[in-house]
Image 1 (cartoon, one colour):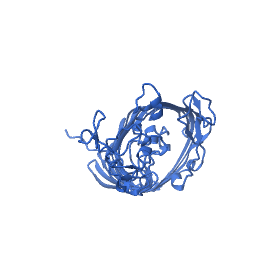
Image 2 (cartoon, helix red, strand yellow):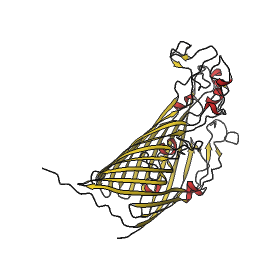
Image 3 (tube, one colour):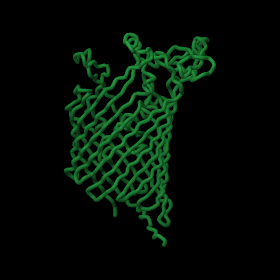
Image 4 (cartoon, helix red, strand yellow):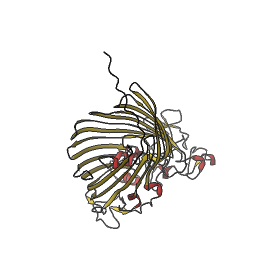
Length: 476
């Protein structure tokens, strides 16, 4: 028995224009450990968005402006991780430092200024192919959190997105893709894109190289009572992140002004951070992979259960050439014994006060989150757990074992078609390693190469009010 072929819905070109106005306000408490931060109880305007769209469905334009990014409504503070809880909190032992926020520019306020084309290139027997083009400033398709805040039910991004991935990839760029339509409910889209690559955590955040990044996104979608999206995304680009020059016995202090050959101390072997020949921390490549999904079931119009999850992996090049020590040793074996016969790992340039050696010229790190959610009548619920390793090496080699655990709980009450109020709680546990030679030497039971491990707790609880209004004009 042959199955009846259901034709695809026709692609209709008709002029339209839409405006979305969205505002989000909050107030609440911030804690570092048991200490309440000075930013507590301050009103904050998170978003003040005007989102304009228009076109004829085939050719479209968008202008999304978030005026809140031009207003300094948040008090910006930096946590003092050296705060001593056993001592009084005062100017000599503060919990936090005030930080002058960066002045926004036009590109910060303009979140999306783009042109899109969607061309129905093929339609036959329930199968179709669309060709998609987008150019301008927009969110590159990477992972699951690719929309803007006002387009989500829960408007707080995951810790993985905001800290590990540096808030995603919103940039000037160009994307070209094709969308295979297997039915009105099922599609598979492939998108390739190129952009400036100005992500501050994962790529060239300070625009040192002006070297474009590129990527692709493969995304499967299924609509219906059971719905799912599954996405594999990849970004490749130049990355930059400096090492902390003030960390005692840290990576930079123990590697600056040294030689790659301590037996032959000639200028060609001298390493200086400012010497462009050495390419110390500049223009390294980073390969970033994401595997993500969002799936759920609609029991009816009032009850929905779902799960969103994402895994991200980063592999970053490092300037870490091999070296020869003053005794002619080139390797270190599994027992920590130096040798010149090639036994074990190569001695490398990057090291810190523990005298360990980093055995690779790349740094691989990862993170994930999982978030079950539900909509039950007028309420939305979300619980999210996330975990990630340090996105880059900054002070010590042991930074590679630093980690962050984040827990989110959100409850939203949709008391109106145009507004909702929500309660959000976030708990963060940071594990940070450091090296202190003097402490090790004066503490019984500590070896010279031991690292110290500190655990810090952050939390906040916020009450949020969101207001949203949509206007659509469409020619029949």
